[in-house]
Length: 448
Image (tube, rainbow, N blue to C red; front, side, top):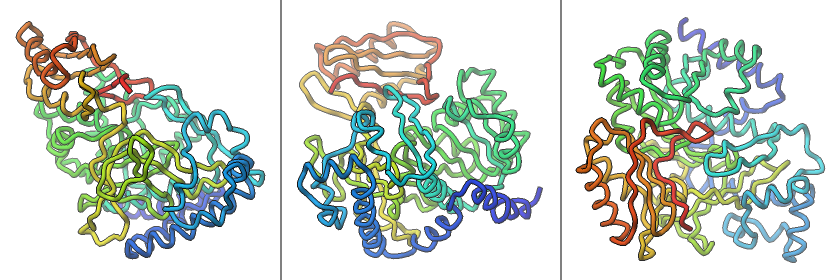
């Protein structure tokens, strides 16, 4: 099928699909494609106006918000800019669980149930309005078009979430067939299943790939090992999300597929927070989402400083997310992107706070400090690090040459980072299991 089919799907079929679902994603996407070229100051000024209206409506319509403001003795008019949000407490998963019914707007339309994959704990259940869904779809759609691909271009999706995999009914299969989007389960990745995935890629010749960076890194390494040339298939871009993208993953994926990797950051709960453009900038969805960066004590940090990402989603009025703590660590950049878009950028997205480890003396460091030790050992093909306590860290390793020399190298390297008194348990495993969501987490720390 020709580019004419892609044009037909993106301009006729998908808009009709969204209209039948009462979604406004087409109009929102067109608006976003205009606003992205405003200056940063203009974008943030418009966002603040929208924030003020969002807070005013939430106070009027959402019982929990009204009770919260009244208990704090503040009025909606006290929140006029993003800087005013410090007057409000943070939302957490517990906030949403404990106040689920009271967080529904009294004027809410139909609400769809959403939930997180639960890769870092118990899944969070929340509600999504048609407006929220429309804005999330539009944000992702805008970012897709930055790379010269569109809805209707062939897409292969590697996903491991039971949320999507459990909804592949006949209607959805027909719809995905029309859109030329094909979902392949990313569970139980063995040499055999990875070879099957590569075969699907070669047969379908997609314009884009979408999924977990860990999965595409595995596929890429296998293809390179078998000297399979995937660079001539016409793949324009590999979109990755839902996990931290490591430099070594980007390198091997780009080498195997002969195309750039586009990183995306967000979540089912917090929304699509940032997307990478072809110039490399991780642009915030600033028209829809207010992002604050806070330190360990909850203080808001200036741009350029590293801390936890806190999100207020301005399209979540019927079930609001206000100052929602994501648990992820990043920096808001002070730079402008060469692409010319005025959208602010994130940099140094370091993953979840549980991706950090704590040395025996209390020093906090990113898990990369330990990952680099293992990356330098050629005999280590896959690994997982679990810090059970300050005194004990487990290292699971997949290796064709697991011996005492390897164990000693890991133990000495880890003790140099974590402390000589820390017990390092090096365990040989056949495979590294994914989380229930299908994601792979290379570092998990149970130390606060």
